Amino acid sequence: MTDTVLPRSSSELNPSSIYATCSMSPTTNLKVIYDSQGFVVVPGLIATSDFPKLQEASESVINLTREAKWPFRRTVGSQFPPFNSNNPDSWGVQHTMHPDLGQTATVFSDWYTSDALTRACAELLECGEDDLELELFNLLINPLSHSFALRWHRDDVKENALPDEEQVALDKWHAGIQWNTALYEDSCLYVVPGSHKVPRTPEQRKHSCTMDPPKDPMDMPGAVLLTLKPGETVFYNNNILHCAVYDHTVKRATLHACTGDSRHSATRARNILQHDLLWIKDDRFREQLNPKGQRMLDRLLDAQKNNFGKDVGYSLEG
Image (spheres, rainbow, N blue to C red):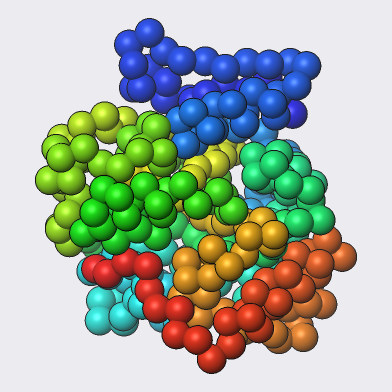
């Protein structure tokens, strides 16, 4: 990796700007920042030759989704799974590694299992690459006709959780990592730095205890806007307090995925298996993966087997 800057939108974090640069051991520095703030931005994880391939693959699945030829999508009006099909407009494409997408899916799975990406995930999770578990890979896109927003939330903590319940959930949430990789400039994500470690304050609870998206995300105490330049990746703890705003007039195609640490996969079951992953058992999917990806898949299949017949439920509503 080259020198790492945290984050590109640092001027929006505080007036003095926060930069973290380390030439000798960048991943060590990344881990310190990630643990402290709950997120860290890393540039340059996509090889130059792969960038146009990912843009082309994204355009392909976006077109299929908007033409109603790909059923797995995040619909405007539904913030979290299960997603209904009541609205023709979409803000996300689900299951981008699904073998029914053919060569397009291979482009995504090759990136998901790329050395640069899995190395960064292992460093931030403090595990070996042989512990990594394949999880989700989706695509966040701009709706065509309706601007849309997600409410302030933590991905696997209910909005009505009491402070003690929040703290218990946050203390055990270290077995996975989520990331967004922007293929075009992206100014959709708002976060509260450091909120992955502590329960919400009374004022923060006022802004995050209903199903309603915010009228102005910056009303949340401590909120910052995170802007990604093309090719930048933000890794974040998905129980950080965050929300997102989707402007239908601004092009968005942002790779949205997560990877787990198989040593603690039981804590991830609901957050991952709620997304209906029966298709991962398809032999075609295994064949499209490289050997590393196949090993990562085996660890997810083990987790799926351990939860067979269980109602894992859904993390959130709305």
